[in-house]
Structure formats: structure tokens, C-alpha cells
Amino acid sequence: MYLIILFLVAFIPFEDFILKFLPGPDRVYFYSRFLSELLIYASFVTVIGRKLIQEIPLVKTPIDVPMAIFWEIVIISIIVNQASIVESFINIRPFLKYVIFFYLIVNVSITLVQANKILLYTIYAGIVQLAIGIAQFLSRGAMDKFLQPRASDVEIGGASKNFVLLSGREIGSIYSAAGDTILFASFMIIFLILIISKLYMINTKDYNYQGKKYSLTKISRKQENVILITLILGTLAAISLTYARAFLFVAIVIVLAYLLLKFGSKRRIGIFLTITSGLILILSIQFVFLGDSIRINYSGNPQQKQQSIVDNMTTVFTPEYIKVARQQRLGIVIDVPRTVIYNKPFLGYGPDMLKTIDDLNSSPTAFIAVELKKETFEDVYWAALLAYYGASGLLILIWMFYRMYKWAKIIYHRTQEYLIKELSLSLMTLILLTIYLLFFNQTLEFRIYGQYFWLLPGLIFNLYHQEKLGYL
Image 1 (cartoon, one colour):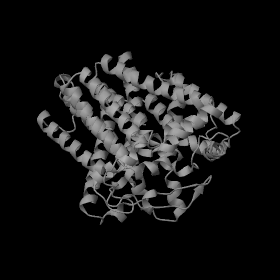
Image 2 (cartoon, rainbow, N blue to C red):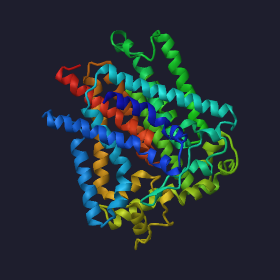
Image 3 (tube, helix red, strand yellow):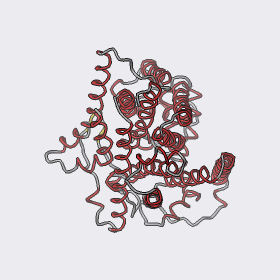
Image 4 (spheres, rainbow, N blue to C red):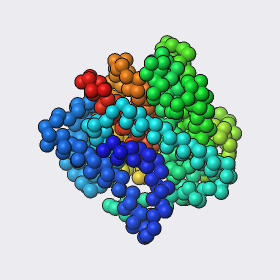
């Protein structure tokens, strides 16, 4: 089972790129993309079934209770709102798939050496993606078509495999073998968290007596520092070249926060986060209400006119951008929560996306200023979750995030194992940043991001459980 997990960790980041070369009709390619998902289900059934037959108790985790309550709310919401079961399943499938993956990781038999190899394979996959992305940029467009994914017109329940990239992302942006700028940027965030956590840990006292056996290669600490710092700088460059503003902002915050953590104190980190949050709030209010009086050079839509990375970042502070955003993410984050709370505050409209959008658009209240469309609805994922499951479902998910973060922090301080500390540090960072990113993308539903998000807590809870029992 360990080898299957290792395969998934190494394969998923390149899945769309590899499968595009499959011979045969379009339908073969389309359904081949479900093989990795079926492998997760089959592995889960095998592991859990074996434990039940042998009467081995399943591993308990700190998020079992909120997880169980959340799925109860999902079922009740479907029934109460008379939502389509097929459409609801299609909508919840990405989340359900990786929750199953999480419980597979938690209950599989795994050693510290194997867990470290899984982590290293993730990092190696990131290095390959980073190298391909940089090569794509240097090729000045020569590699673009080769790296583009294969489109498909085959549908399941009205859903087809469509790539925004095929109709054009930002001119000059890179997407490596991930197939899309957003997918590539999101994976680079995971990669950045892992390598910067490793950089932090190899410069602690724990490294001297435990950490050497978990290094990237059999080299000195000084050499590994140089390699990791180089990878960090390269990752920052790659994320900026995707033109994905939210991910670039998050990447910068990660680096600054770790620098403060390493060379500063908790007090300085608190001051930094307070100032950053305050500036974001002030800028948001200033540009929403005073945008017309502020003049920043606007270079146009980067999908239509090539612009620099700096121009791409400053565009968000222009009245023109705010006007467009008000019809999309900004409008959703402002209008949808008010409408849900006013009409269906407890269980929402159900997880059937199309029905939910129609109900919101036809709401008797005046809160929805623009017509919501499925192409942009889930971009503000927190608002979408509120619409699907109401305040009850959203609060349970927030509780789940809190429990995951809290126990990652507890385990970081309690464990005596270097690798578990490193994984816990990565998970704490990932949870905080995911909370922010879910205001801009349905990040948890992305194949690459979703897999690694649930891989980390799965490994941590598994290994810490074994440590408490004295098995490590």
C-alpha cells in the first residue's frame, strides 16, 4: 500500500501531461483521468476492510467528530433542499475523494523512513515542475503547446474537461507540466512550504542528532542550505511568472513569516501579521470607496495585452479592476453571504451548484447585484460553502480547520521525532494560507493541492499515533 501512495504522490502533479499522450479516442483519455481516483477508493476499501476483518481498531484523529458532523449536514441539506443527488455528488466528489485519501493515509502501515520518502518524492516532483516551468519561460513560448493539456468534450452529468488555459491565460505566463497557471502556482505554494520548513528545521538543534538522515541528499548542512535557498528563490520567481496574484502574495508572506520566526520572536510575528492585516483592510476600503480618486498606471487585461509582473500586481488597485471585480469575486464575497444569511442561514441551498446559483439569482432580496455564473461562483470558496451548507456546515468546517491546526501545533511541541516536527510545521503553515486562498479559488478541489493538503495531516496523525504506542 505504501508503494501505491508513493506512486500517487509522484504521479498526480504530472497526471494531465502524461495522460495526454495516451493513444486512442478522446473518451479513453477522459476516463483515464479517473484511474488515480479509483486507485484511492480501492486502496481505502482494502486497508479498512483488512483492519475490520482482523479486528484492528481504526486510528482516531482530532478531526473525526467535525468530519462526521459535516457529512451529516451535507446529507440533511440535500434532503431538505431537495437537491439533485447526482449533481450534489458531482459537486462534493472532489472534497470527498481527498477525505477518503486522508483516512487511507491515517490507517495504512507506514514507517518513518517510508514517510520521509513520501515527503522527498513530493519535493522531487516540485523540483521537476519548477525546472520545467523555468525552461518554459526561457523558451519564450516554444514549449507552450507541448505542455498544454489535452481538451475533452466528453461529459459526465453535464461536466466536461475544459481548460481555461486552452482559451488563453495571461500572455507570457508559465504553467509547467501542471497544465494551468493556477494549478502550477498552487503546487508551487505546497512545494515552497515544504522546502522552507525543511530549511527552518535543518538549522535547529534537532538536526544535529536526528535530522541528518532526513536531508534531501547526503551532503553537508551548509550545502543543503544553499540548495534550499536557491529553490526558494526559484519558486518565488516561478510563482510570479504564473501571474497568479493571490499565490504570489501568499508566497511572499510565507518567506517573511519564516524569516521572522527564525530571526525574530513571536511578538515580532504578531506585529507583522497585525500590520499586514491592517494594511490589507485599509487598502481594500480605500480602493473600493475611493478608487476613482486614485490613479495608478493600468496596463489592461493581461489576457489580452502583455504586461509586466509589477503592472499585473498593481492592476488590482485600479478603479477599472475594482469595477470588474465587483461583478465577480468582490461581488460574490459581499452579496452571497448576506443573501444566504437572510434566506437560508442554517442549511443553505444544498450542494447542487446549478440549483444553488439559480436560487441565489432568483432570491427575493436585493443583495445579489449581478447574475451569478458557475464559472466564477466557487472562486470565493468560503462564500460557496456557506451557500451550499449554510452557517452550520461552514462553522463545522472552520472548527475542523481549527482542530487540525491546533493538533499540528500540539504534536509539534510534544513529539520527539524530527520528521513529525517538520511535517507539523508545514501543516500549520499550509492551513493558515489555505484559509486565505479559499477566498480566491476552490483550492481544496484542485487535484494537486487537495492531495497534498490531506496527505500532511494523514502522515502526522499516523506517525504520532505510532509514536504514542511506541511503534516508531
